[in-house]
Image (tube, rainbow, N blue to C red; front, side, top):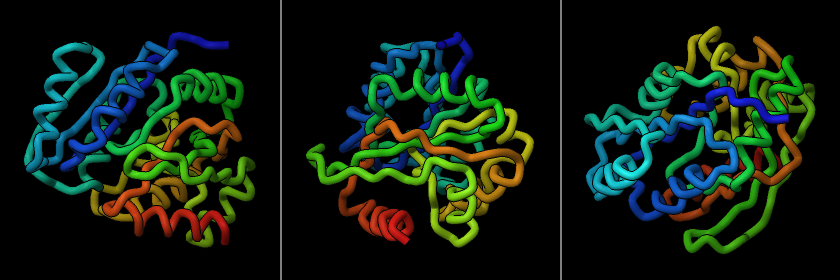
Length: 224
């Protein structure tokens, strides 16, 4: 089962040059090819924009916006508002998508019309791409919703694929939040429909000095 629905992959970028190459190539190498790749450079001061422009020049699916820094909340809000896809997939600037990620999640959402957002299991890699471990978050809506209500983020944001219609119905990302943008979104989406995680490992989540505190929190919440 695999239809030709348009998918929007969204990626906020801020000073992410070190790992951008791997992240972008992992999307361009997807087995599911009917997607647009929306990227906002949020006022980077490194050479992120130069790298992004080089990718935009070679693949027409990339839609690049460059502007002054406004923060993560406003960037995520703008990305989702601009998306044209039936489904919206998130990937962060330093993470890596497995080649069949989009195909598997599209098929899952087609088969489960009651689900408005699906994440996945994921591997944790270090700054050099070496495997550290893997985590398998709960797959059932009831457990995911309960953990979210307790403040434990039960869907890894860069593994998520959402229905555009559901995201629009709840008003999208909260542009005022520059942290906890994900759990706020899951709580509001969870009031609109069911949430799920696929047991398949579909992304590699990179642990490095700039993400260590965020990752530690994710691990603690998953184990709570």
